Length: 192
Image (cartoon, rainbow, N blue to C red; front, side):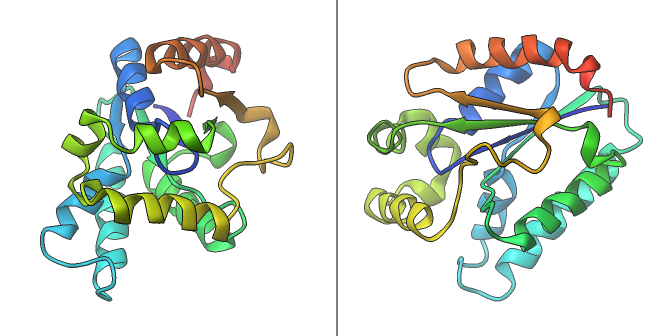
């Protein structure tokens, strides 16, 4: 199984790029809001049940995919690079897939905040992520998360040999997906 993790700050385009990459590769996309939106139907962000349920759904799905005929998985993740617990949680997800962290291709997206504020309001984002429909709250999260955590690397990524950083400020999701697909072929087929 091949494995791609797309990470970066809120509204950078992880889901849109993941959709375009899934179309190019035939991989299955699990964007980070799939579990969030399900759990949010029953619990709010602040409820103690919320985060453990989201994490358990992700882990159980990945465990089920481990021995499936799925040829590749694309997972989007908002990764606070300054929080060891975020790295540990991602490690647990990858472990559930039965792959080595060192064989994952990590795609980091970055874009200007003004562009991300506009992307925060796109029809696709609001359709797929109901929890983002309160634009004021969503914009506040975008700004606060960036102020409180390091959501992009600065030449110091944990796995430099498996890392592709793309500034997609002026690129379409299809253009970014094409760059990723090319990098996959140079990454030794990213065999996980």
